[in-house]
Amino acid sequence: MNLKFGFAAIIAICLLVSCGTQENKQEDTITEEVEESKFLSPPLVSHIYTADPSAHVFDGKIYIYPSHDVETVVEEDDMGAHFNMMDYHVFSMESPDGEVVDHGKVLDVEDIPWAKRQLWAPDAAEKDGKYYLYFPAKDKDDIFRIGVAVADNPAGPFKAEPEAINGSYSMDPAVFKDDDGSYYLYFGGIWGGQLQQYRDNKYQPVGKGPYDGIPAAEEVSLMPKIAKLSADMLQMAESPKDVMLLDADGNPILAGDNDRRFFEAAWVHKYNDKYYFSYSTGDTHFIAYGIGDSPYGPFTYQGNILNPVQGWTNHHSIVEFQNKWYLFYHDTELTDKTHLRNIKMAELKHNADGRIETIEPIKK
Ligand code: FUB
Image (cartoon, rainbow, N blue to C red; front, side, top):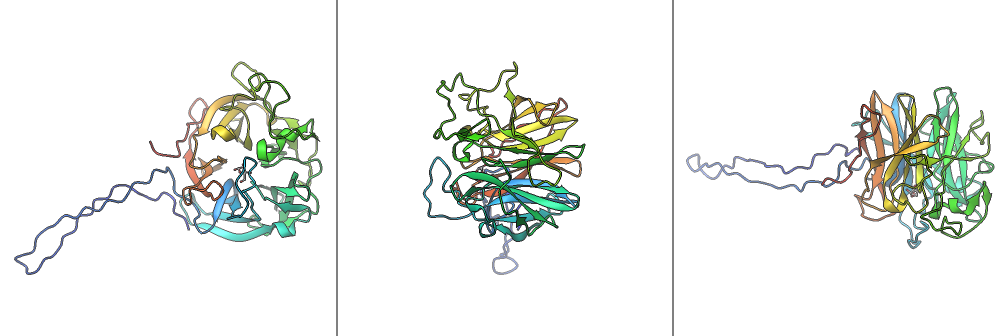
């Protein structure tokens, strides 16, 4: 059900109350107070828990590919074990304030031969009338890999490839289609996302920290990864490369710069021929962004697109629909529990200088 653009203001309801005879009739004013919502936008979906919404326009409709959050007995920890999702649903909307249709379960962990658990944030892409769902999951050894599943319809159902994408690792895949028809896979996330366990695309387990024995204040942060996709959309056509995030002086963002360094949730959109790379800063809870001249970057840090939401995680996507731009994101309005989230949307504005107006998800 679409609860969007709900209105929760203080409503004064004036009722004419009839008391007894015509002569005794008097006008009473009853004021009923409805508490004003502190949230910018209401949940798009409330019959199941949803998070990490990747939105795309396919066949003239908005399609949303989110994570499907579930209750779990797994205890919460810093590595996100409590995000124990087991399947995906797809949603669509004819218009930004239209009904949100749940197309049901489109892929289940049981139907992914290589995967064991934790179906985290997915994304989708279309090429030549086929639809590709990219998703992270832990394999039988509890290592995150990225898989792909294929459908003939944007609403699925999707059939998983028998193996994860060769050479894939970590999580939060996002696919960007450039104007020349090239598709790029972005991915990565630190802490529970395991990116810190890799150097030069090789598994080198080092524990939780991203640090290579250098103080975080001096060490370059771990950067998200990019690889062009193969023509069949099922593999990476090249070894993953770092997506460099730079400060205004051209220096790489440092590991100790928690307000600006990459944590997870990569997304790319193009506006006025510039590439915008946006991401979550994790433990500081921002959706930040940088601007660049190539899908490979480098991207120069600009600021925040979305300030912290209610809940620990912050994860988003950005899409243009009928000449307006929208941010899809999530929070925990329905439950106030970190791992039981609900997706939302809000209009996003690019200023004349190309910068994005920061969205405040909680009213001041
Ligand atoms: O939903 C599980 C994980 O939480 C996602 O993969 C992260 O981006 C964070 O939102």
